[in-house]
Image (tube, rainbow, N blue to C red; front, top):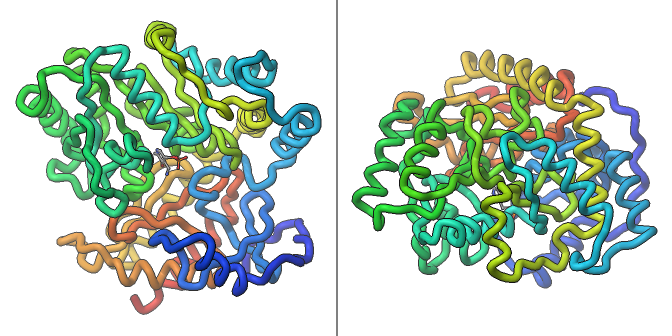
Length: 437
Ligand code: PMP
């Protein structure tokens, strides 16, 4: 059974799950993205645990798609939001408000180099939209480069950056080009960063006007299936892109705020400092919040046009986001992620030796992926098997994420308060679920 946890969920008096499901079909429309065969009706959350309508507790190893950084309903974040809500929910970000600048200052203090200017938005998609606009305005160039297997958003501009066919729809790409993904497990050149970087140079020379507006990458691809880019890749590519007149954008929507354990930001694991950093998800512990952080020099271009976002940096989200930063620091979450993460990956690697179906275990900190294959040599995605395991884990009380276009990668990215006991339970549950596979 799950590790002991001192929390009594409230009795649920809302609509039963069956009824919600029927109504959802009518009023919310179809989607491919409904995760479980029989969707869960989650009614309460406390730190790394979720509760369904019957009071059953689940270990949340996916954190609301890598969003709940501090823990579900962390008391400090709840308190900051409630206090600000009582005082002032919204005016307009045209006026002054102390919560916005206090948060911006705290966020800027977390950034390396000259990344000191913050623009608040409401989501990761909006952050990447804005970053792309900044890159084009600042450089005067049009061409954007992104990686295959990337996810950067679903709006009409950012869907061009996203490169997973499962998410695409017919729309002009708008001068966005995708280069080879430096994926150590599945990539054509393995971990050879030099060869992948050469392909970027080739693209600039032969597939573009010879210049670039911007290059964008997630150092740890999330939706694409927990892929850590080949070591050294970003350093080489940032150099190439800057020489071609472009700026370098790091999408930290999933990998920031200490989750990797070794560093506060994902890009730091590659020893680079981007020109623009986008973030969302973990920044608000569940609040709709995103940000773009850049240098004062690049920010200058924003004075050429009106830049306004009605809700971006609203007082409530700013107060909540600021509380998140303090919690992560006060509770030393980065070192905790390193500690628990190394224990978890070690145990997962032992599990890999036992179960042939585990093709790869990867990641760092609490940013891990387990990839299932039917054949280790051919790396054939174990799509059906992963789907069965996914359901079994849920029944055992463990919720993980799915990734990659085949859904054969389990993404383990829990709230950052996840403990070693939780990690052990997850591994034992996975071991049990895989019996006979
Ligand atoms: N970038 C990355 C790396 C993401 O994972 C996501 C969301 N999965 C986005 C951007 C888009 O964020 P949002 O869903 O908040 O628009």
